Amino acid sequence: MTALREQIMQALVTRLRTITAANGYSHDVRQVIRGDTEQPTSWPAILVVEGEETYERENTCVQATMAIEIVVEEKVAGSVLHKGTGLSAWQEDLFRAIWGGDDRLGGLVGSIDPLAMSPTVMSPEDSTAQATFDVSINYTFRIANPAQHG
Image 1: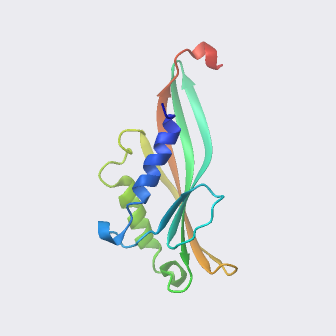
Image 2 (image 1 turned 180 degrees about the horizontal axis):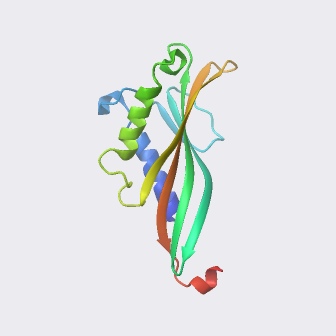
């Protein structure tokens, strides 16, 4: 069986892949990449980077909090991020994809909390503009025998 953390990440990436004009969004995402080792090959792209995870245990129940960075990247030529006008439209698309309808990723998580949105960062080396949206995903899982887990 796939670990709960992996199921959550797969569900999040699947949701972000729905951001297309055909689905009624303002943007047409061409690529969603999980992790920060692969570079986009088509734009706009979304990179989903897993951050630190913390745990709090009470008997057989573990409360986990996972930090996630969602990075939106566009080519500068014609980029709404570059023009400074598209940040709120991107934020609306991300919020609708993640929190619209079912804000618990199909019941996998307790909550997804928006933490921060960083302004656009320009990268003249590769002609891209980026904006980062930080979220915190909270979920619970059970362990069979607490004595075996410290």
